[in-house]
Amino acid sequence: MAPKAKKKTGKKPARKVAKPVRKASRSKQQPVDLYYWATPNGWKISIMLEECALPYKVHFVNIGKGDQFKPEFLKIAPNNRMPAIVDPEGPGGKPIPVFESGAILQYLGRKTGKFYPKEERKRVEADEWLFWQMANLGPMAGQAHHFRLYAPEKLPYAIERYTNECRRLYGVLEKKLKGRNYICGEYSIVDMACIGWARPWERQGQDPNEFPNVKAWRERVMARPAVVRGMAIKPDPSTVIDATKDKAAFELLFKQGAKK
Ligand SMILES: N[C@@H](CCC(=O)N[C@@H](CS)C(=O)NCC(=O)O)C(=O)O
Image 1 (cartoon, rainbow, N blue to C red):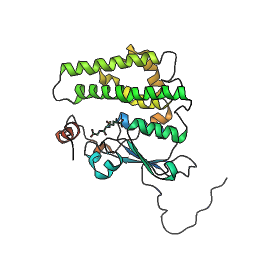
Image 2: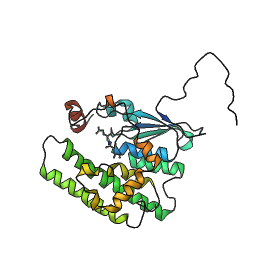
Image 3: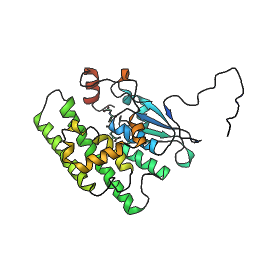
Image 4: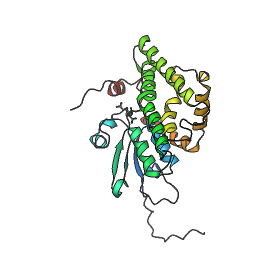
């Protein structure tokens, strides 16, 4: 079909939504607001939005500069951590904020009916492995990164403890992936939750060749176009602060006390 001719008004057409925005083709849905920074937890949600072809608008939360403590962000995510979303078309057609990446993945899975099995036995399995990532792989890999890369003192006990715990977890994943392409059989939110954490496993002191099933799964998932697009969303490099070199960012990220 030939495109309709546009009326000439002399004015520049107004942008509907600010950049960066991913639009689902032919979608009339309002974009989901994604509060994001390019980290393994942030990627879970950019990947899911890409996989579901949902329109979304990225709001960068610069965690090295303290955006996570801004009152407007804390209203959405009271734990001062990204990712978070606001779905303007939530239950009853009203906006809903969601924080915690696992809860966001489940919400988007229920909303779209995609990548989150409906059949109860399969859903239980997906929930088990999603919680496994949230309570094990993410936190243990996070501590391994912290003590191996960020801690000003190299503490052998802490490095060994979290490197070993990661090794144990990749061993668990290795067995789960035996004879399967994806963690719960079919590709799901569980793979999206785990991939960002498995991507930098060398930084966790792991030898990928020790876990051939995990290695093959990692390559399979990372080759998905939506995963590539989701992980490619990056803030302007001039705004990214390296907390290993910047004292203020280090204090802000790693010396948080209770705020009243
Ligand atoms: N359990 C949370 C963890 C989120 C999280 O740790 N986000 C980090 C970046 S990966 C963050 O926002 N850090 C800011 C801070 O430490 O103040 C989730 O999965 O959503």
